[in-house]
Image (tube, rainbow, N blue to C red; front, side, top):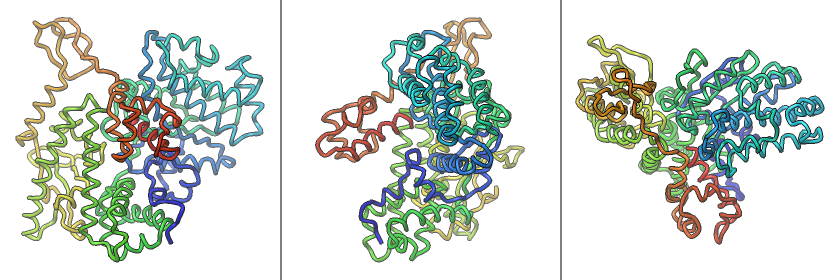
Length: 591
């Protein structure tokens, strides 16, 4: 029976960052016990998966499990989101000895660790007060609440403070000792080790969510250098990242400095489909049994939705939401064509969202434009035609193609931005594609397969094959790829500042020209923070009506981002909608 006080949206909420502990406990569906165990073990991990595939939910659930077992194993699991990192770009750096980004990063970690410690070991408050008094000195009267407030206010200052430049942080910091700890990763690590000893912890597990894509390019490199510096048998760091677009920098090596943990998805794997089905079942039945009954009268309906999710619960939620908006739950049965129409509509929104990446990933603007063009004008029609021929011969069908590693290695960003958006899935296992060439197998999101009639119905999913002889393969000899290599190689080239020198390079590590000794010319990009702030409120994921009302008061996303709930409130926009608007601005700025 349908609940009267809540909407379907309350049950298929897709912004996991804002979900409380009770919701996570109630609706979490376990798929891999192994991943939960690894997220809490003593190893360092890069936890990779595309947008919406469930990394945040797994991390938050792991933190909850650590909380439940703390009295037995003394493992302190701390989930930390870096969603607000982009704000740090507003602070001009004139003093190289003070890094606002690293101070903020370490400050956030320290604050969350302290809060978790006092919640789990309240009887040890005197020990904690004594330890904090060594940092804050006479700033507070041996009172944890005052110490934590001082730290929180400093973090808030870094996020929102109007500072002329970073040199003023010396005066603004609560104490000299705190600055010393937050300025130096080694000092910070030493302090964490002191807390581990004070509280007899077996280890601290730091679960870093939004640990890369929300950072600017330079922030990413700083973060992973810092991540590496924390390595210790008693400090385990796990960082959730998106495939492809992360800049680990010169000093961090995946596999060496941290193991890789990946969430993978295969559309014709029954266990994969069952997992998404269980997530939907648990949430939709909690809202209205009749909704679930209508979705499952014809199993092809629910199976198609689950397959088209591509392992992404968020995408499945959007399909269900679109079905409700189109009124299908008022019908006796759900026609399959209405399901396909809803999938197409959600996919259209995904492509629009992909297109807006040009605003965020400014460095990859041309890659994003060419990636969309390649997918829509070459890959999709070619794959549809291939499968049509395969059907006539009653042969296995294809969901993707093999791409020569020689092509991929030259223009990886083009495919990685598509993988980031869950439009493509890349299997990095090298396979022979003939003529002494090797390739990666790249599959299209199943929602594209169904929407563009590459796959005609759910029964054809079982006919998909990854065998080389049943798929197309492309190399540098394929005209469209040779042209892309030419365009994108030009785009990333840096030239010598000496106009008489012809040296060019794609390697950003060159500071000086090896031919003539002059500086390499690398254009300075405008701060991402400033770029996004200047974007119109039309870009926010809000209804046209709300955007129109907002336009009477705000013109840019930056104005909404800086505003309070009270600032946003107006006629027809009260607390609930105002909070939704504020969250939309935060989500846009953080990606």
